[in-house]
Length: 345
Image (cartoon, rainbow, N blue to C red; front, side):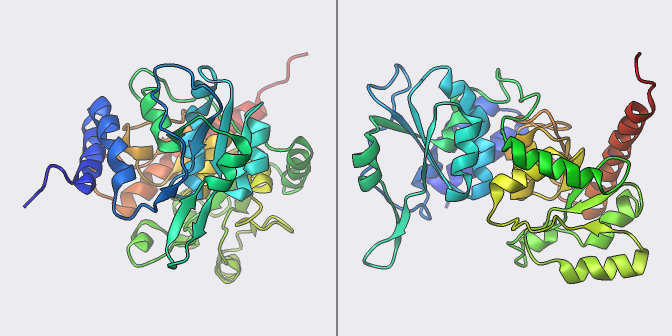
């Protein structure tokens, strides 16, 4: 029997509402995600912000879900900063420097997830709260709903991340050394390639067969070991896939953002790479539906992201690749036209 009080059912209904275009209802239902059974307890958390008036002290934006989700939810942090000036953001330690640079005046603290004495995981805010003194909190994934994303708030026309300028310049020089043409980042699977997730991922050869083996200089954005696969494809096809030198793409996310910011196009599956590229404002082909199933033919949060699946359609590998390749060729054509246009004197 379906229980209408079930939080799991409510969150499922939220995504159905998004897909059906009832976005306001979806955001209301999505608020019940914090009550899901799999959520870790949160200790020492200040009271929830009532959202009707500025808090009496710093407002803590609490992290939730995965590291890639931070880039998605914080796309609405600029909206919050126009309303609340004193903000503390909890985030993955790998993102602290990047977010503090991107959001002027915001203090960032590492995630508080820890193991308790019973061996379970908890979010323990007690020490952090004693040090920073937040007066209230809001969950990061509540920001898009608070500011009516995909309803009255338009998608960001460009990204919001500010990679380190020195690092970004160094990566642009490296990308220029790869030759002419648009520099294209590729990510065809994530680090969570279990039996279910793998159905939504691809091989490198499948992606290249769709978009062209020698269309542009390709850069690997894989943060898992793909050296053997890349070598096999290069031997079989002669297509070079360039690996960024001396870059740990799993742990050096600030440097990864600097690299991605220098690319002309990113084609990627649904993973952290897609979220970083979206937040950097790079034209991004997402081999999935729009974020949170908020829109068709566009993304409800990022104007630079093109989703390759409609929310009311099942995932079809061939169709997703076909649509991705079609958009890719279109964007490459635009890049070529710009490159060949005469320079004004």
